[in-house]
Image 1: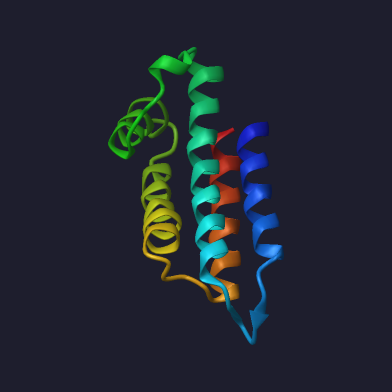
Image 2: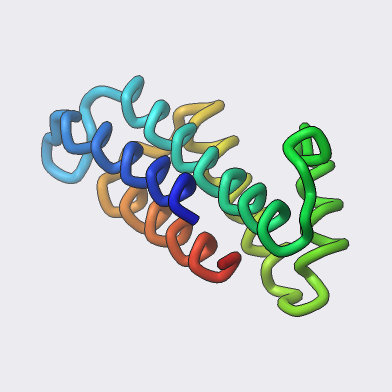
Length: 125
């Protein structure tokens, strides 16, 4: 899970440079970038799992969110049914609300989202 942790650490590094006023990040652009990077960390964790545990090659890895859902269902949900719900929550939080729409900029909310991403990565190991 080295690559996924690297991505997650990159997201945290991006946030360290963003000015904070009160409990809010004042520049939303780098916060969005950090959310996008954290979401990629989730996808990398799934990719690493599929390669190391199931022998998939890069060409066979999922290429869309629906393909990731299918892979989770096929290879991972059997041992942990909560993983699908966590993936959906992280997709909505990190990718949609955080990156795509830029709706999340409260410092505590951002930190909690990154903690949830780290927990997901640890479960995928």
